Image 1 (tube, rainbow, N blue to C red):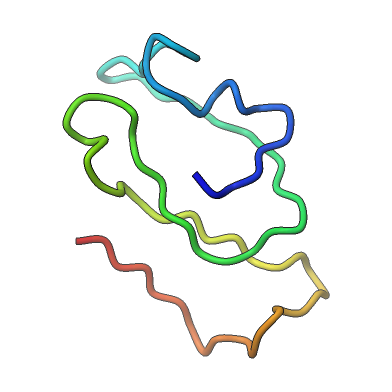
Image 2 (image 1 turned 90 degrees about the vertical axis):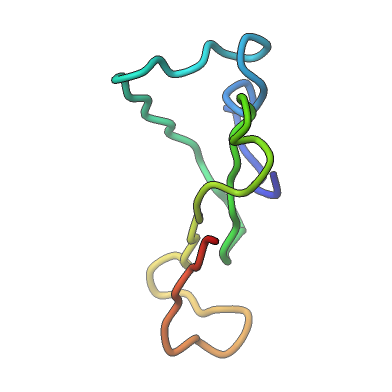
Amino acid sequence: HGVRQLNSAWADGPAYITQCPIQTGQTYVYNFTITGQRGTLFYHAHYSWIRASVYGPLVILPMHNTSYPFPKPHKEVPIVF
């Protein structure tokens, strides 16, 4: 939520509605395009009990040779409780 997805919104949704869940021991590569966005967002699952909270960060850096829309941070440390 919060990331404007271009041509891949079908991959953002609840299990068995927009896609099948990832099975135990399997992997899933999610390629998507981000345009004109930067910052830190957090994703969460749409499956079982893990949908109740955030699950991990997405750190979107500015494109190479472009500046931040705010003073450049010294460093970024996402923390998930």
